[in-house]
Image (cartoon, rainbow, N blue to C red; front, side):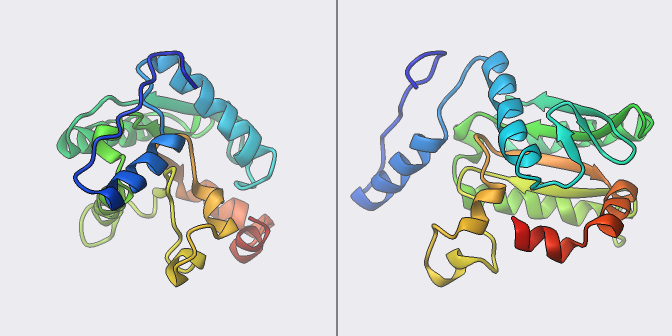
Length: 204
């Protein structure tokens, strides 16, 4: 893609990291237009998450959940992890204040690769988000669950663990940009009764 404010930054300190960076940039374009980020994010949800039933209760890019309600998309231009963390908590607050018949789920998108272009950095950030919900902290696991997506996502128990980063299962979580999906735990449990988690994983 060569329009919409996209440019390629190929600077690196050595040849190995330079090749890795080029690979990231090839699937993680710098996009300055939030409208394009929103459009492409929705198209990805439609083509992969909905059409291939990666999430069994996502019907369309704009409707998901049991009962069905709106999908909330928010694009963050945070340039520090602290700012990204704050933006995440604002999304948690928005869902707490909304009825599940109004907003089913939230998808928080971070399109600036300067923050989360490195998958390991994003993974560490996501672990912090999950830890903050557990019973030993805020005890919100009964209310919310998190799913994470990234252009270089690698399941810990997938082929990437064996050195093969092309394992097909990884692509169920490989999105155009880094994303944090906030789900309502009650809706996940209803969905699991209809389609067991193991079956969804095998299908994906």
